[in-house]
Length: 217
Image 1 (cartoon, helix red, strand yellow):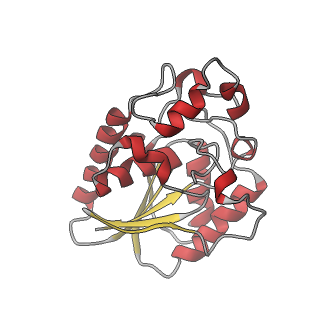
Image 2 (cartoon, rainbow, N blue to C red):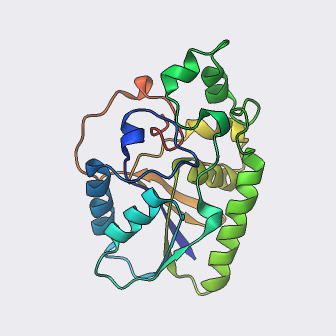
Image 3 (tube, rainbow, N blue to C red):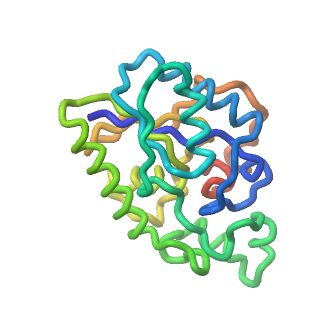
């Protein structure tokens, strides 16, 4: 089985650097354009199915990308974005202004310094692996399968494949609309973005990770 791991398109909260997590936010105009570009990128592949987070931004991305293909969309609860607890709905600036700058600590060590009330990363990994196992059981013959999910969820899975601590989570960059490829247990490609429409981008050293808020550097 080959997994084509796509991060959903941009939302207004992504653009505003606002933490989404479990908040159900739809795509922006740019996000819809990214979803269409993702669709063009995968049209040459013989996809057996698409597995999608039940959250609106992921479902919209999959529906736009696969419009007219007849490819079956299956929602999996295991693919929903990780919960960010008390940070959801707040901006990076608001969190950085709190005593001790907990955002900076979380960027350095997200496993050790999670948001208050947030979902533990090992628990996220366990449910994602359960979802991947379900997908694998349905495709025992090496099918290509599209998975449309979230930056945090995909990054957790990539850390698992690489065998590194979740404290290294934000060393991975996953842009909105990007495509990563895994042939479990091997990781083949990370953050392919050549298919995406051109958009103004900040330099890598100015970017900071916000799960489903902004791509990680």
